[in-house]
Picture 1 (tube, each protein chain N blue to C red):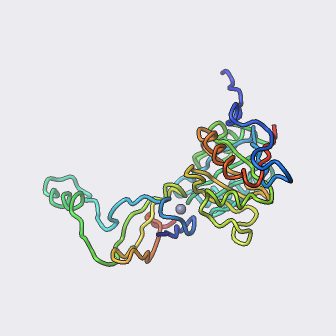
Picture 2 (cartoon, chains in turn green, cyan):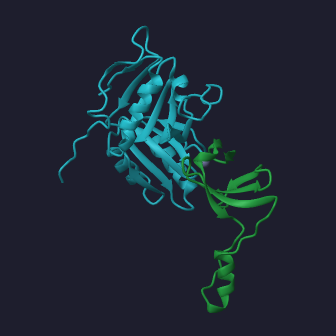
Picture 3 (spheres, each protein chain N blue to C red):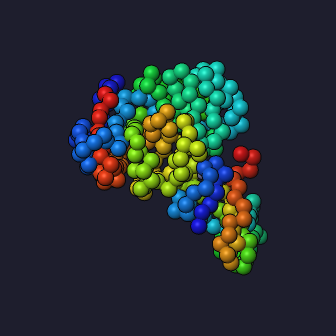
Length: 87
Length: 200
Ligand SMILES: [Zn+2]
């Protein structure tokens, strides 16, 4: 599998580290009534068969965090973008 | 303040001479670029445009937005990631480069001295690309990796920053892997003949 880093170009998989689901959102609040949202954020993940947004870190390259859209059935990489918006 | 003595990263590891295939012209000529200034530059948030203008005014180079080089009088700037560059200078030797950058780019970028942390190995010769292909999964064909091109990747599983300076390929390694890199290079270049020369 190869990932085309928006900064470095096409690179081998072993330059990257998978860093988890990119669709979860960290709750803003630490209030007790947000406990369920925190459980969801920390533990619960969907298991889609098809396109999925994931975080990958280009640790052996430019050190950028990337948002990769990958088809979990075929492993096809559909899109790669910087996780940080506006760069 | 006492000053530290500059020492080669390959001191006691590599001696000048011919390695591997002994006859004919060497396929690869290796040297260590010593006593040069090395520093990283990271743009402060929201100051990318000001930083580019300041570097242009101070060093006569336009910071590249991707993995490539911009060369001004005495300093080369190499893109190593979004908003980050590696600077190399022969005229501003050792920590003088980082001091100069920090002063001129104050408030616009964070500057870190790398002159004592990295070894710069220069590889030249007709078989350089054939040797690097044994440990580096990048296309170095001149049509896609021309003069000034740069890449951060791994060579023989060791983290490396590589850039092309004319017909030479310069490789920046963490100096702690200098010995391991030498072991890799010696094996990889043996079939072509490797000549080690010193530059300083
Ligand atoms: Zn990258």
